[in-house]
Amino acid sequence: MHKVLVPLAQGCEELEAVTIIDLLRRANINVITAGLDSRAVTASRGTVLIPDTDLDKALADDYDMVVLPGGLPGADNLDNDERIKTLLIKMAKSEKFTAAICAAPKVLAHAGLLERKKATAYPGILDDVNNAHVSSDAIVIDGKVITSRGPGTAMDFALTLIESLAGKEKRDQVEKSLVR
Image (tube, rainbow, N blue to C red; front, side, top):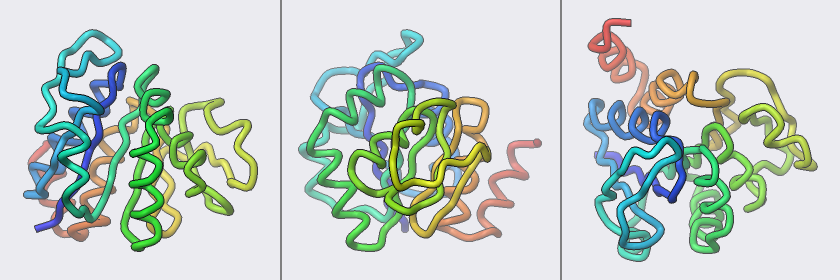
């Protein structure tokens, strides 16, 4: 069974976080949510999310993918956490998936993962990122890096994550059950 870590920072975008978690779990992917500390996470619109564990405990395990929800100040909180950057670099060196949506692709950029890569993000977020090829596409896959634009792309982003880990047949199965 594939294992995915979704770090939840204070101020994350709840629509993105919950959509990613929900759809991956529908695909029978083991999703672990981890707060940056041991507190409940208050998302950008006031929704309170209870992570499965805290980041320090979560870092004791290995993952096939790390997915960063966006939102502000959530993405800034992820970006300011050195444990997240260290994890992202470790994932990239191990040729495992890293993914981010909305404002969170800047965390990938600041960790050096978008160097000479094609990526997308919420408009304006990657404007000052050098050596990345910024796209206006809804979802961009460049090797093991997957990025997406924002809350409106969250469902397609999550389905893309499923396909990347578990294949097209699993994606189609989950998508069909959503009655899209």
